Image (tube, rainbow over all chains, first blue to last red; front, side):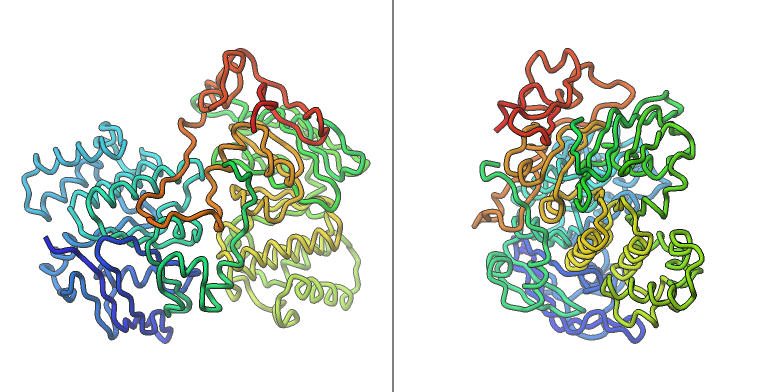
Length: 255
Length: 336
């Protein structure tokens, strides 16, 4: 299978008179972790929606593994097999009307895989991700937020994607458990040789997990490069001010 | 709880019980806080630790199924019994002001900024002349760093960004000139740069009116960055309470230590190969409030646990070398 990379060239999107993406260009190399940071309203989520094919571009181009996004149902199916996403509100991403098991059955429809085969893979993934098997018979509102997020990860991985996009994966999680989800992403990234795109307000987290990072500001990329460079020697004024505003944690050196 | 002679606000022995269908339980147990005048105390704790319940009890705004069993609040020379219904009603907007978490719902969408500010001001200083009122309100908005303060008065909350709305909430507090300002997760909904501005405004307000500030947060970064004192809460109890400089440099409770270890600093060493980075967690789950452990409530998750920890709840006691550094741990002396 070819490795998936993402190429975004001069992407533009407007909502009414407001330009929310003003010509964004990015290259996410296959197999790397790419972090996207920036403040609310900077266009992070719109960019992700465009990569997922959920937001039409006014102009510009997005290539997945070198191929442009295809319109229509066939295109959507191909895209779903290449790119999967874990969105911010995991509980809301799971239909409240169906049991978790039924939601996972949809994967077999899209992949045209026998239900039993999908279920067997799902059971193995649940085991791997530490989700109790009993969750299959529950509805989204009956499981905790942390579990819902894991179920979303499992559902995304069932599609055998090449690219996994995580929008604010640690939002709403306590600091004592956020590491659990991050470690999980780090492990599956290597196991499945995924290209990982992580969008987050949490600069400290992105700094630790990303190979490369882009700083977005008002619909533009203010700075992009190796994470070490962007975080520890930022060149743009905006990236510098964003990093300066991050609260400094003073903790004992031995921790 | 040791009493600091210069203390502005002292909360002691707060115990709040909730009645639920599954049974009743005390979600906050024997909580005491000491906040000196002109000082900011950061109350940290994870979801379900009871920190917001403490704030709501101080404001007398607890839900109908909650009862304050014990608790007293001392503000300067006055003491209020929190177990008496309505004991703090008269304090709200006068001696105690509040900045809420969500700037999008804390302000009333059908009232102008003027109406919001005027309400508090009229409550604090009834009978103020119109011109004087106007001048004070404009000054308050200017003090919290809003541009065009006079024009802002005529605007509605939806005209303002989240950070500006939090500034309005701080301006309202400024006009109330409280002895105690409670800020419950005031920056959670805001971006990092706006968070820094709002925290600077809260510090400025403290300096301007010399009040005590209770900052409720789950961010240790905010506490070590802006607070003078810290109280760490876990499952309804205070685990550690003391000056930030001391506690952050040398936490004496295993929970505080674990929490600090989980928090990721922006200037921590970075792995050149990011793929190999792994993060710290605290294993286990919060105890079921209906079935609390017999001994220390943190014992099931603690790395330092010994047999004695599971026998009876450890007391919150002062460190031998620091009367203002309190720790609820039998092995506090060995935690380094």
